[in-house]
Image (cartoon, rainbow, N blue to C red; front, side):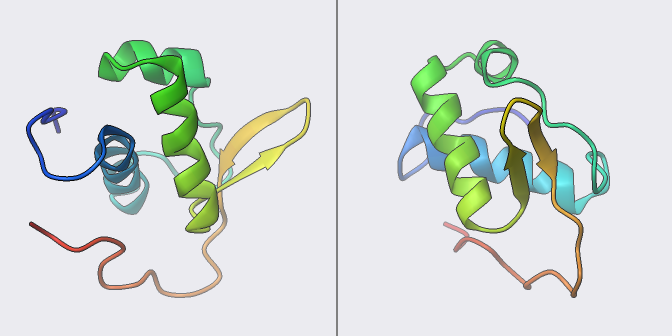
Amino acid sequence: MELDRDAPGYLYETVAKLIAVRIESGELAPHTPLPAEGQLAREYGVSLGTARHATRLLRERGLVVTVKSKGTYVAKRDREPPICLWSVA
């Protein structure tokens, strides 16, 4: 999936959605380290602040966990994922 800079909403939400799709598809499996925020910023062509905000949103949604001095990892799924984490425009 490619970043659509013209999508409605904030850019960090769009980046978070793209990462969430990778998690839900199994491309990023549970316990897999998420790329570093700097790498995410380069991959999606966004600022480091945008990548950090996207990671924070994913953490708030329970899709990733951050371990101090270790990194951010895809969270283990203890239950079925919700049908939709974000509304589709």
